[in-house]
Length: 164
Image (cartoon, rainbow, N blue to C red):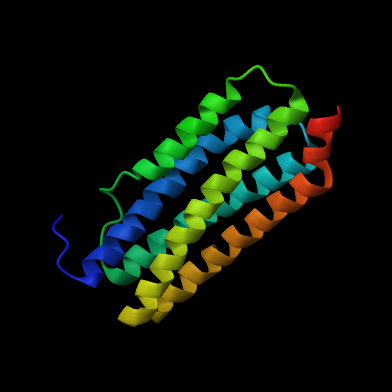
């Protein structure tokens, strides 16, 4: 696809996010299985449910814009998830594994926050108010997930990983 306008780039970005969310949804069960901290498992399960809804929101965006959402492969998410998978293969104490899972999950969240932030900026500039509202809802969820992961790390997991 040749990109000749900001509108083209916007659609490209949305397709990239759509694929990223799909990849993440497939990877999350393995991450949840490796986690041992109850709060971390709960946060991951809740975010998995949110991710399903976020995929539906992106489908709504494509419908509003009159475009197909398929066709892009998010290589950045692929790399982040490959790194997470490689980390999960380490022989690590459960508490250390939880800390590493949080680090991997936060890398993913930060990527998504950057992607959705950019998409929101484009949607606003292009006057796609309905799409902007959908994207802002997802951006807010991604930020809250990142904050929740930080809270879990700072109040429980990191200390246990160091002092178990």
